[in-house]
Each structure stands twice: as structure tokens, then as C-alpha cells.
Amino acid sequence: MKKSTVKLKSKLWIEINGIKCFGPGPCTLLELIEETGSISQAAKKMNMSYKKAWEIVSRLNDVTGHQFVLSNTGGEHGGGSHISDKAKEMIRNYQHLQERLQGFLEREEGFIDI
Amino acid sequence: MKKSTVKLKSKLWIEINGIKCFGPGPCTLLELIEETGSISQAAKKMNMSYKKAWEIVSRLNDVTGHQFVLSNTGGEHGGGSHISDKAKEMIRNYQHLQERLQGFLEREEGFIDI
DNA sequence: ATGCGTTATATATTTAAAAAAATAACGATA
DNA sequence: TATCGTTATTTTTTTAAATATATAACGCAT
Image 1 (tube, each protein chain N blue to C red):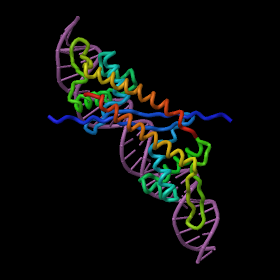
Image 2 (cartoon, each protein chain N blue to C red; image 1 turned 30 degrees about the vertical axis):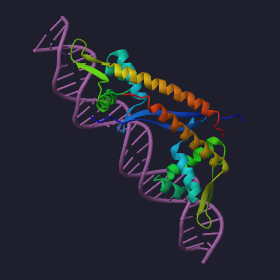
Image 3 (cartoon, chains in turn red, orange, green, yellow; image 1 turned 90 degrees about the horizontal axis):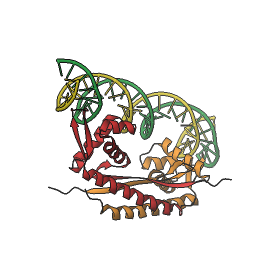
Image 4 (cartoon, each protein chain N blue to C red; image 1 turned 120 degrees about the vertical axis):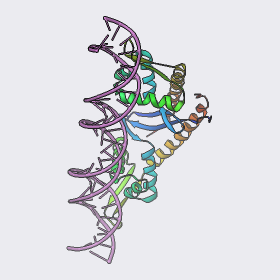
């Protein structure tokens, strides 16, 4: 008889004025926009449709009142996007929070007994 | 200019052998089964289809190897269900954990600045 | 002017999840 | 044996989410 493995899992997100706008998906997306310089390439890298990526960016800019992502259309390579310092700060905060939550869950996991 | 309200939210669940089996839904369901003595009435009370409720119960019994919910079919009132001590223990553990997580999030919320 | 890759947006299609509906079995009771 | 409300299960329908497709605009380069 094999002992079963018990794991605590969670999903963490931020709501602004009641609107869910920042979780694991948006966080990864922002990182990839920074890395690739483009929303469409970022979306492709994480197997997300451009439309969904655009909606995330749009909602983020909208609800925070900050320009998390700045975009240009046209030009040499068709345009592109990059993220603001505010966005970078948000990424850092979220990741730090995520790590602390992970620690919390791992400590608690020991107390779950089935 | 009104300051926007920032809230940290999370969802917490337990996986056994990689299978998600206990979260807020199942927890409420078990409580209502205890309260009503029936899966169907419990499901109705929380606006859940009987089928989904039954699947939750089935998976829970299956994956834990414990009889979290014990059912009888037929008989005076058509049968019914009740939950085991193991299930009650699980509910307590989960709720306690949820409370501690809530505290964690509220403390962290102050550090999020947008 | 034409081509390029991108942003921006709307529309259509597909997929997955949830709910609803239908059916059978069960066992006490009348 | 007919009735009852439940559990148990399958099948159908509805709903929601995600994806795919299509189109226009943009501005630089050739």
C-alpha cells in the first residue's frame, strides 16, 4: 500500500476596483513582452491567442490608470511594445508574493492529514 | 480623483495524487450534506446540479480511499447520505487553513502599491 | 506605390464546461 | 404491487470560454 501524495495548491491574483486584472497569465505575458518587444510574439511564445493577450494588456492599462504596456504601430518592424517601470515593479511584487505564498503553503502542507 | 481599491484574492485547493479533489465547492457541499442528510438537497441549496455534486462526492471517496460520504438508496425517505468523521476533520482543516491564508493575504495587501 | 510585421478590432468557429433532462434501481411503507 | 424520494448513470442541451479567422491602419523601407 503506497502512501498517497497530498499537495496544497493555490492561485493568486489581484483585483482592482473589483476587476481581476493580474495573475500568473498576465505576469508571464508582461515578461515576454519585455523579452520580445512585441505583444504578438509574446502571445505566441506562451501559446496564447493575440486577441486574449491584447485584452489582458488593454484591461491592465485601463484599470490601473497606468500605461503598463506602451505600443507603437507601423514603422521599421511593423511596430512593437514594451513595458513600463510600473509594470516591472508589479511583476517583482507579484513574484515575491507568489514565493512567500508558496512557502506558506509548503509549511501548511505538513498539517494536512488524510 | 478617487483612489482605486486593490485586493489580493486567491483560491486554495488540495490535490491527492495529482487530482484536484477538495476546494471551496466540495467543502460547502460536504457541510450541506451533513446539514440536509442528502446529496440532492445539498446540491440544490448551493445551486449545483446533482450530477456535479455526485461527481465531487464520488471523486472524493475514490481518491482519498476513505468514505467521506456514505449513502443509502431506497427506504423510508428514498435514502440519503451523511459524512464521515474523516470528512468533518477535512472540513475543519480546510477552513482553518483558509482563515490563515486570508490573514496572510490581508497582511500582504498593504505592500501592493499601484 | 508596395511590402512588411505589428497593433487594433470585429466576427465566426471551435472547444470545453456546466447544466438539464431522462432513466433505472433501491428499499421501506402502505 | 404501487408509491415515494433518493442515489446512480447516461444522454442531451445549453452556456461560456477560448481560439481562429478576417480586416484595417500604421509608418518605415525599398
